[in-house]
Image (cartoon, rainbow, N blue to C red):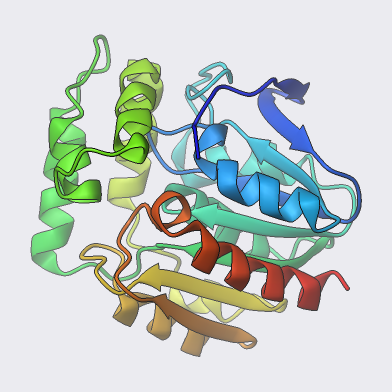
Length: 259
């Protein structure tokens, strides 16, 4: 598919793509990206009878940067928008935000799906991501080459080109702030995962080196209603690179939570 810019609405302090009618599904993207990264999921879910609200993280897409403090600073403006039954779906940093809201016991969250979520990084991985965060420039455009190499293996594609554009367009201060929170987080605490009372789906790619299948399985074991799925031959950007498999998994889960 093509990854063209879609119209936005202002929802609270955040910009969002809205599509479809029906029970609510909220999609939360990862660091450096924007709501369009969920393009394939927006189309699939809205066509299946759901209202999709796809938010731009602060300092990303068309959402202004207001310097949120810590993971809770990113979770709070999303949590405040949830006034009806909802399934939260997050990718990478968005997965941390979605899990944080679900673990808080929010009354309207009926299910949470965490795609490529991190949990208990190895010391080497933790140091690497902290070093990448420290190296980011919060005043000028950052070179996306290394990021695209990790995500796509350096192979040219429409998906890689779109991510390159989004990474360059992200507010530099917003990008660094979000990446720093992501780097400093080692996933939710075990006690938080155990507090997620709604169904929780943890999905990652078989070839994902940083949010590994082991991480998803470990989180699923801690969540009372957790389940883990691993998508074959996929890596970090599987919502874009493996849309059929991701959409099939999400639709099964959403239908279970919002029948």
